[in-house]
Amino acid sequence: MPCKSRKSILLVEDEDILRSSLTRLFQREDYLVVSANSVEEAVKASPLTFDVIVTDVRLESSNGMELVDLYSTELPIIVITAFASVSGAVESMQKGAVDYLVKPFSHEDLLEKVATAVERKQLMMDEILSLDEYFKSFVIKYREVMTDTQMAKCLGISRKTLWNKKQKFGL
Image (cartoon, rainbow, N blue to C red; front, side, top):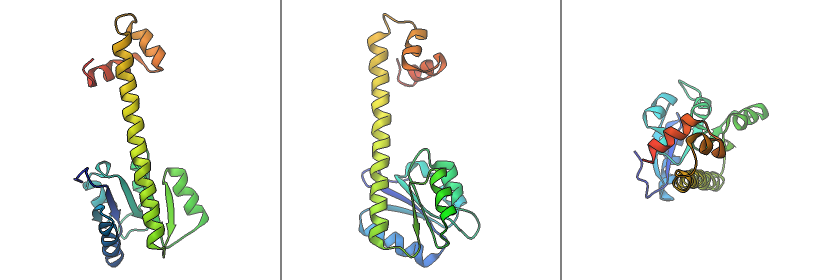
């Protein structure tokens, strides 16, 4: 599990030499890197604990697009491939990848895309925290003068979601 004081990358690449080279590149930039050579190995590494996933599309035993399908709503994913096509790029982006790089790519391009993805993840987290803070302050402010039904309607959520969130935050 990554240390949260350093930004973390889950690198999924089945080519040993490239995986090793990219791991060293990211480590030189002070990223914590965990590498995997398949989707199955990547899933075992608890992907949601990372700031970004960098994955090859064509892996020996699986397809990196599976990670995009599974995790793109939760964290940024950069797709890399040696088999570039317009349809592949469009599919990656439609499924939620934040970027698509064609091998060979420059280290500078990859590092720039990773830095942007990490920043995007931080913005996503800030937004979630901001929404949670708004929810808590709203409930505290109005719990004496509004019913749960009224609060849920004002917040645009179901009463069940309101109840679950109130339980989560001990309200």
